[in-house]
Length: 439
Image (tube, rainbow, N blue to C red; front, side, top):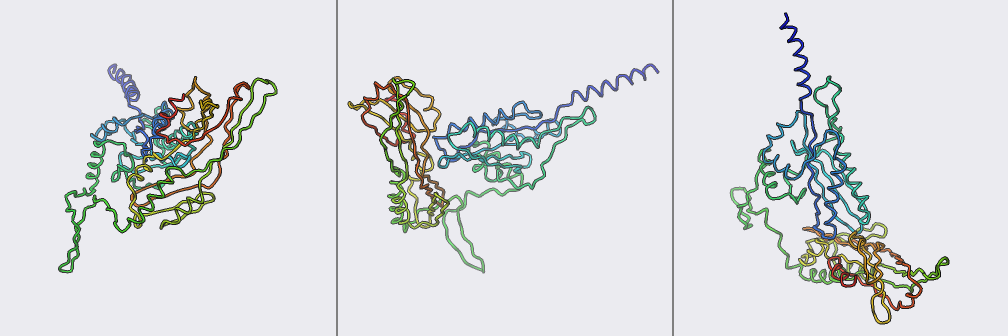
């Protein structure tokens, strides 16, 4: 009887220890670097900031275990690892991609259930390029809102041993990540892509036959028509489009190089009533597109579509009429055509006294100079942009005027040395080599 009483005392302790030692249910979130889909070097630095903000939003949240690219590779190499996770755990992959169009950054975020490769949520975030802190905050909040509905609830005392997930009531759509991984996350390395292919095989997806002959010969016989083809064959240029292509090339040369008209207005001088030794100098400048010339050039080409939305006009050109010149395609795809207005003020001996760099880049706003008065600004925004794909090219133009006023305070004794002003558009990639010798 004493033994039975002892056992009755031990059993509750064992049960309590079992409950306390049970591993807590988790939501594993795999966060990859955001993908710069256009490989635009001017906005490449944004990727790390977006990932960091998402990490900060999720870090420390109950039930979340943050994972990185290496963790994703490991679990895709051995999917049985998910069986070793705490009971009821979930695994989600966060995929983000972004691109810049005119003066805005567009971010697409997808949340994928790794167990089924279903897309469980998708969000779009758009913010002005110069408001990067606001963009980071919006992206972080969007991912947080996507993940929260899938977090485990805290267990109520001992009545519920394992937390219960809240499942959002929404229609689930098949996510393309298992069949088009390169489009969804182009920054995954070859090994992950290979593992994705193995997942396709597990889902009975057919593997492409890369050994199909490249010749394209129709055959006929016994009431059956067949044709050999190669799905990887690239579309060749059409010789019949050569004349249109030369015209397009001439137009793009002008649009990519110098599409703007600039009007320099006489500077304004305001004396300080509270301090007669200083005055404020203002340089008004008006930026606008050569809109009439541009429209005339574009309308001479056989465009496939035209869209007008207020002050924005978009011209569409397709491969049926043009062979897109490779050098222009590369310039558009990489964003190498983008330029920054730089204003320089000289004295009578043509020495540079003042430099104004009108750029949204944070790097240049943190720079200082001991040689000249350096004034970083952001009042100019691109009024023309280009998009190019495999089959179409788009030219978007905005027919508005940007009235910029660059102002700064100078000692009255130095104002008399100001003699003339020059404004020049400098390619974003050449901005450093242009400004460094001056500053």
